[in-house]
Length: 434
Image (cartoon, rainbow, N blue to C red; front, side):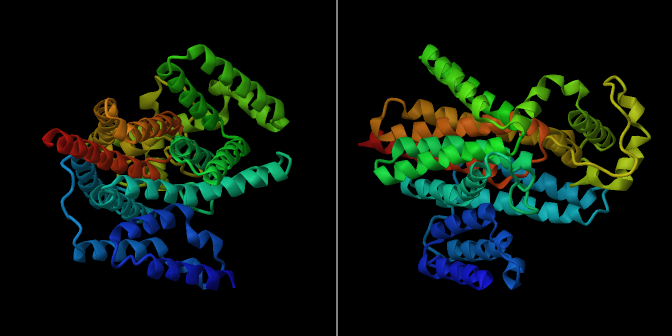
């Protein structure tokens, strides 16, 4: 019954949303299927339906056949994303990994980049961008609300994980996704005027925080601290912010279960922690791959290929300048870092492109903030740009120890910032011409 209901609801959304007629509505459904992961809730025939791929094809066809402009904004970030896609494709074709997961990762990588271009091309108004943000809340936020409620109802004993085998299935990955989501929740809360929607967003915020706590992720705590630190630097009322932050920390530790506080206490002992040092070993392995293949890297999932892992374990002594135990001789591990993941997969040049995308996206936000500062009617654009900078900052900090270089939401944010900057500049040009 659940499969029938889910599939029927999916078809209803396609039809009622008139995706064939309005491709920008398809973007919302594309976002929803990418982040809510409908197959996670299915156990029968509906579990094998490629919802996201179906929506992607329909949306692209609808855009092609519609009267919507096909012209993409002239933006450095889009050029870098296109270059990143080409680089990843060459890397996949020339990679040293024989792992079947490599091509699946490449397919997902290309799908994410295509979606970013579609967002940049179709989300051309405030209403469309706002609708997309609510689609994020109704998909990724849904997971946060359900998991947070589960954690609270269990009295803090549940250990929270994300949906199934998705990229956010791991507890640490799920926590980072929730942290990236928090600034978006805040932005929508500040913009909306409807009382019930405000209450719903506040509830989503607190349940999302509960989810983050329930994952027992130390990286998540570092990400939250990074957000707090950036807010402290930016806000002129530093004393008030400091008092709020201290009160929040004290409250969190007072209600947190003992196993959570014990785990957080190990953050200061990273050099003695086997989990963290295991990450360092994977970073060294990824570096060795990149040193051998500096231009295009080893290909997707190269470091997770056991044969490749074993080969570079024999060369591990080359990086003894960083003392660690030798690599595990029985299994390979993921890179556990957005930076070393990109380095091992796509080489030093691929990592450089990735870093440039992060920097250019930050610059898009900064230019939007500066351009909208003196225009009350564009205040929303500046606030959204600031919020998305917080999301990027959290991703850049916490992602340093997580395998999330190809996470749907962050590329969606890159694209939103492209569209937002273009929209802001266009409005300013129109105002100057009148």
